[in-house]
Every structure is written in structure tokens, then in C-alpha cells.
Length: 343
Image 1 (cartoon, rainbow, N blue to C red):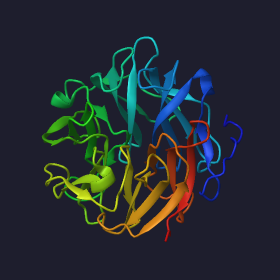
Image 2 (cartoon, helix red, strand yellow):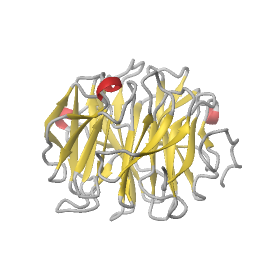
Image 3 (cartoon, rainbow, N blue to C red):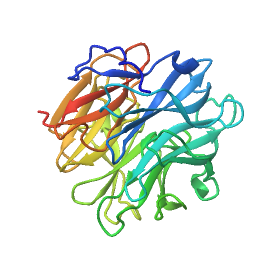
Image 4 (spheres, rainbow, N blue to C red):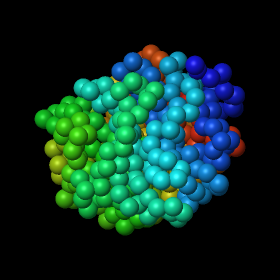
């Protein structure tokens, strides 16, 4: 049964945001690191790290999930999508919805107890064939991910190519330790097998990909100098098989933080704390080409942990998009709608 409507907070979003994960929910100390997908039925499935004992990166955590069938107004009970607090410690949710199989695929890093950050020892995957109600046993991806094994996916959403010769290809991006390098990992059989791209991206960190309206794949990356240079980007014109050089999007200013990007309906969207003073002003920007970003919408002005995940399509019709974000409401993860026709 769906839970009762959760407490609304005062956000810039209209209608107001709903709290999806909060401290104490399902006996969990803290939730961080959002990811979200929308299935073919319109069901929203949200993910987060469930941290036990503290809210720090070293806390033991599994990957928690909640689902909404009414466009984010209410959310079902918490389900463990991956991991076990005693024997299978996992983090960095990175979710795909694969239209051809109607599966939700969740990739993640596996790590050791008391991990203090980037200390992955392998990678795993689980999937759901019933819109997130139940989850499969883990599939160990460590050998297939090769040199990328133990790197931290996303966090956020993986990319399923929607057009071009490689239509249906799955692309995951993961980083190996802080600001060392990023890897792109590819599946051409809907997640059954994976292989790392030969290219790496030095000095980059948490990243997301999207396929622009012209078919180009954009890789959008966190790095240390984003306050002055903007986000790091690289582009692929062959479905992620090869990428051009790393350049910088000066309009996408950012503190040292994760960001999210999706493309649908002829536009590309990007979310992050749009600030150089810290992790505040969670904002969605809109672009027609993935290069120029003239439109924006403020989700929340206050300071928070800063991470966000955009839904890869309209939510509840054709006029609004959706964002799952770390909010100011007591360290919670909240969901909000935003107008696609932003100024």
C-alpha cells in the first residue's frame, strides 16, 4: 500500500516538493546520493544510499528504493534494492530504465566495511521487472568492468541511447577515487555483458551522460576547478565508442559537487548547486543544444548536501519535469516538479 502523503516543504518548486527519504525512515540514520528513473507505465522509482550509524561516507549502507505511481505525490514503503548491512556493502546508485526489456537496472560499487570514501572492491548490478516492487539477486560485474572495476558509478542515472546506429546501448560512467580519472563502461545487450571503453578522463570525478537532440553523447563531469572553469565535458559522435577532448562549460558554474543531466522533448536539462559560494541554489538549467544554457529554474535556494537526479522525461503530462534532490529539510532527499517552459 502507498504511504500517506509526506510532509510538504517550502521550496521554489510548484507544486511543493515531497520528502522521499529522511532520517529515521525504515530505521536508517541518514539517506544520501539520489538516483531516479521513470518506467514505461509512468511509475517513478527513487534510490538512495541508506547509511547506518552516521551520515558520513564511512557509514555502512545499502541501496534503498521507493516508488510512486501518482507522479511523486506519495511514495510506497522503503525496499532494499541492493546490498546487505552485514555482508554486502554497496553504494553509488546508478539506475537505467531499458524500454526494450521493461527492466530497471541498478548498477553500483561494492566496498569494504568502514569505507572512508572511494574504496571500491568491485561492481554489481541488480534489476527489477515489476516497476521496482522486487529486485533480482546481484550480478557481479567486477570482471567485465575490467580496469573500471571498483570505480564508483555516477551517481545518478545511466544512459540508454535513444537514437543512432547504437540505439539501445547502455552507457555508465564511473570515477576511480577522487579526481583521478573517469571511465565509460558499455553494454550492447541490455545489461547482460559490459566492457570498459579504452578512453579515460584524467582528473575528473562524479559524472553523468546524456544524448543530445542531434544524437551526440555529452559526458558532463565534476572536477576541482568548476567554480572558475565550469563543468568538464567531452562529446562523442559515435554512441560513446570514442570521445573528443575534455573542455569546460563556463555557464555551468558549480561548487565541488555532483550534477545531473537528461535530454527529452527537444531540450537538454542540467541540475546542480548553481553557485560558487557553496552547495546552495539547487537549479535546473535548460538548453537546446547542450552548449548554451539561457533558461533556468530555481528549485531551492538554501544550502544542502547538493546532489540531484533528473527524471529522463516529462512527469504527469507534458508541462513538467521531475527532480530528486538533497534538500535543506533536515538532510532529506525530496522530489519536486519544475516547469519545462522555464525562462
